[in-house]
Image (cartoon, rainbow over all chains, first blue to last red; front, top):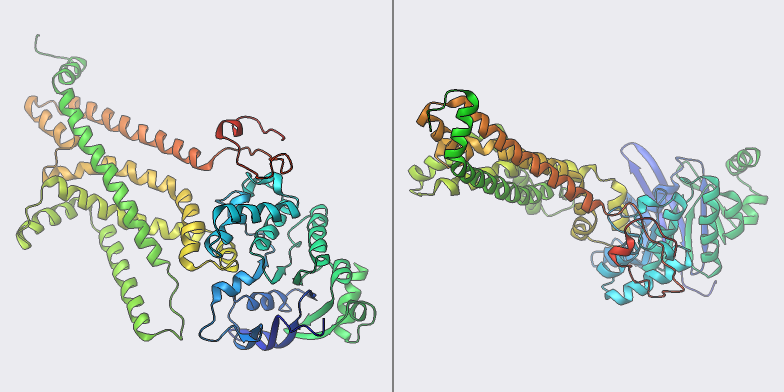
Length: 248
Length: 267
């Protein structure tokens, strides 16, 4: 792992909305096959950080390097970058006007310019992986939340991204459906997919992550291996946050 | 045939005498309304989409910023002017104005198409803008997140949903146009109202003639309303979906339409 070059480097990243400083001086690196879980209270800037990484939000200052190239430099192709950095949303955001299959084909067809047969095969491959292949003809509105989220994961995987970002993927699901989505994510982690996951599922984070980042009030308060963060947290805020989770 | 005396006798008499004349009027009315609504929708989609183009950022080229402002001003002016004046007045201004100012002798029909299209376009532009803005921002974000450009997002994700959502309003416009093309009688377009007026003037039977005319208008609007409802259901597609067995059918070929109909079938 150490011999690999980082895929993604975030340096001194800051974001403010008006007077509100949401992110301050964020620094971290993602190496291939890393699973990074970002935890922290609501409003601590976790989602904003994720959204800055694929430029759904424009950072106020700082630098993001993708394979050591700045994503803010003039010649950088934003569309290609986003195709390499997938995103799974809290509210699934499947395209309502398309079937499950079309949802998983539109990106490969329009952005990666694959032909129909290829795009179809890729879509079926990843829909099979998330266990949604039988539902290719369904519209998103006809599926449960957990099923929709699994399709959304397949849609992101169909782009064959180098990193997949998850923005609280299970927060809009009921407990039973949380399980089926986490199961899929767990198998992706085992297969070595590089992932950055914002989550409130502490047991899951402890289990799958190679590194855990605890965010508090827009800064990285503590960072380390899962055993470090969950068993021996040093920062007072981390202890307080985790104790609330354990006592809940 | 003895001269009619009662209301019903007059109705039968006029129907017998003028039905084909009225039907010719219906045809003109329908053609004007359909073409006008269709062209109006095209104009409205174009203007509505341009109105929702995101403003250039603070670092953008100043020329582009000026161009953007100018475009938005022109589009807004178009909408406000054509929504804010009566179609009847617009018809007069366009028809007689083109003759007097540009020495253009357009036919009343052509002027009619022009006025109905432009007028509908102004209303549709706002409908389209509302439709686009009502689509959940998550749809745009998801499209961006897989690398789609603004125009790809619009064409593949936002517009198909917008058009489905504004279909009832398109229907409203069509029905309004069927009725409101009657104002084009002021520039002698021989639509249904105009023909009715001509027929009524011959025997001075206004009530009987307009009673018939109102029935004809209602038949046209009601038929259109039903057709549009049918189109909406068609777009929504089946309430069911068919499960596909990926092992039995590794290609995942889509089942035929006929099979997908009816009850939900497993495998």
